[in-house]
Image (cartoon, rainbow, N blue to C red; front, side, top):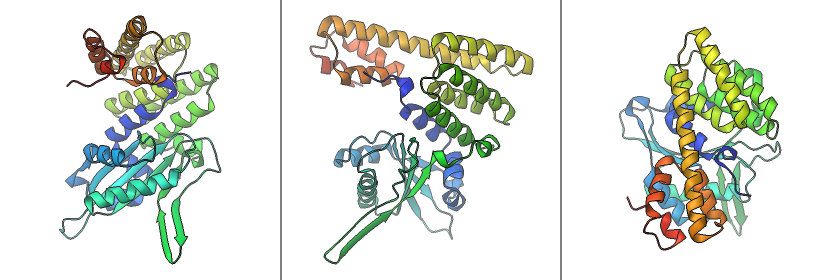
Length: 310
């Protein structure tokens, strides 16, 4: 069965990490956060990341990020790289994949590469932290920082003002409430109410709501019930963030409709779609879906539909 976007964590993690990278490091790697010169900014190296991914054979690296940051110092030009991976489930050869990514990034830039793995799975015993081998006098050891989301206590997360405390709580609840819609409804509503009490800005509330709404997906009837609760709550609190929330919902509904229409069009022309095509449609942004619908007119094959012609 093809997974739906709500079953995947890649997109919401990617969006929130990119939007709140400074908070991300403050929460998960405070030692690095304190040593970085944030006034010089930072840069997500998407082009380099794509080159490294193409050159490697370590499997799917969708939630890898490579970030260039500047260290505090005595005025010397000293920048380093941070390689981040958020992994939602146990992955074979995970440590070797981290190692391959590290040495390819180092080879490309000749700069230190810090490895940070966020393990968002449900297996308490899975905690890869190094890749090593020792053979005939040659020894290789690569150690990286591993953060296990399961290690965080809910009480500590609830008392934190960092946005990634909310992100972590939402992720953990999403794992625990799978196939329990009523329970998920309750924890989702609690998390949303906490956004208004957490001292977050209006934009932070909207962005964190988007993350919560994605990973804690509800059936349509409960989603509508929750929306009614939010409207009443905001009217009482005199915090009219709901207008933005409604636009998010409308955009998601529009995306769902375009995806459904595109799927039907493709099925009529090409028959039952292969898993890879269903997956691309399920994970695509609205802009991609609209572009693929245009390709449908002239494309002679299913593969041609998904070619980026921009």
